[in-house]
Amino acid sequence: MKDQGGSWIQGISTIGIPVTDQVAALGFYRDILGFDVLVDAPMPGTLGRWIMLAPHGSEVSISLVLADTGMAVGVQTGIRFSTGDVEATYLWLNRHHVPVGELLRWPGVLPMFQAQDPDGNRFEVIEVPR
Image (cartoon, rainbow, N blue to C red; front, side, top):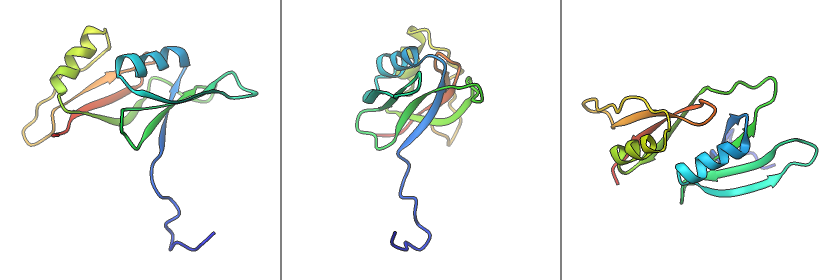
């Protein structure tokens, strides 16, 4: 391997989200959030599948990782998904019975709210100007 001056990591490709039911999680991220399915393949020797999804055109994806006995679900993921219209996204998720927090509009801060997937994993949705 060529010496890159300590710069071996070149980016973030996928972020794992622990789930108890990959089918339910796939339906949520694909059908409710509108993500594209990049990979959905069996993982030989395991009960799970390798599932990667991403918002259309995103360079970073999420992987729905089947939680094992040592992996917590219902966690704060630290993920911030972006939208061009936070209010419309908030209303859409509400209509689809997704647990959402208060729509926050603080001075000088991008509008945002918190939401949860079927396992209770929490993420934020922020409005990013187009």
